[in-house]
Length: 330
Image (cartoon, rainbow, N blue to C red; front, side, top):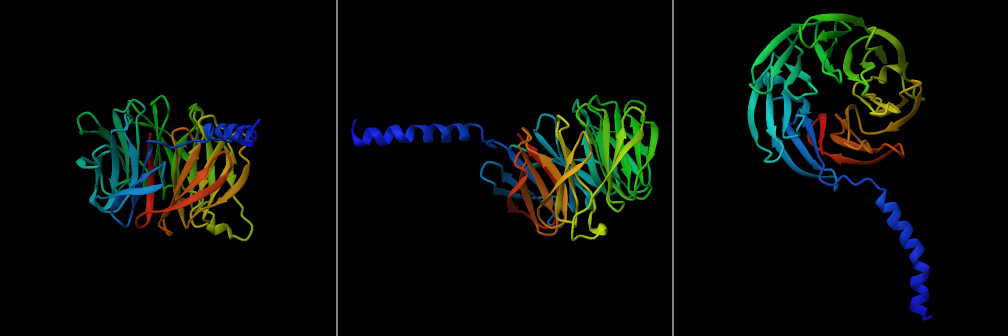
C-alpha cells in the first residue's frame, strides 16, 4: 500500500466521525429571527443560520410584543405608543396594514386556528379580540389593572391574561368572553404560558420573584418556583419571559436585571441551572426544533443564543435599541 493510501486509510475513521457529528448538529437553515426594539422603533431581522443581521425595519412607536401568524406569513407588532397593531409581510418585509387595539398594546397571542388575535392593552384594562380574517374587533374583555401577559390553551378554549397591578391571572372563556376564574399570584405578573398538553399555565411575577404553576383544570396554584443566585440580591431576580419545551422536560425563565436565564425541570419544578446572558434579559423564543433559545437583552442591546442541549450561551448578536420581543419563522 502506498504512503498516500495509508494516510487516507488512517483519516477515514476521523472523517466519518466528523461527518456523523455534523449530521446531528442542528442547523437553522432558512429560519428568520424577528426582534422588536422598544426604543429603536424598529424590527431587527436576523438570519438564524449565519446569526447576522440582514435588515432593520422602521415601525411604529415603542414596539414590544410580536407574534407570527400560524402560517408564518405575517408578523404582528404591538406598537404600544402608536396604539395599534402593525402587520409586517415576512417575505417582502414590508408593512401591509394595521389592526385596531386599545391604548398601549403590550403583549398578544394568536388562537391555535389562526383566526383570532388576543391583545392586552395596558392603559385601558382591556383585552381586545380581533378577527384576523376581517380585521374587525370582535369583543373587548374588561380585566384587571395594567393587563400584560397573554396565553391561550392549545385547544383554543381558554385565554389567560395577567394584570400587573391587580396581581391576577384571568381565565377567559374564548366563546362567551366571560371571565371564568381569577387566580391571585405574586406581585406584577408579566407573562402567561400554557404547557403544550394544556394541563398547566405558568405565570411569572416580576416583583414577586416567582413563577406560579397553575393547574388549568382546577384554576389553582399547584407550585411556586423561586430563584436564588449566589452574589445577587433577591430584588435583582425578576422573572419575565417563559419558554417551556413541548415535551415538558425543561422550562426557561428570563430573570431580567439578574442577566440570567433560569433552567427548570418542568416536571419537578426544580431550578437546575442559571445561564449568563446579556443585560436585562426580557423575552424568550425557541427555534422550531427547540434546539436553540433566543433571549432579548434590553439594556445591552443584543440577543443571546442558547444551546438547549448543552445549556450553554453560544453567542450574542447586536440588534437595535432596547430589544424587547422575539419571534422565529421556520
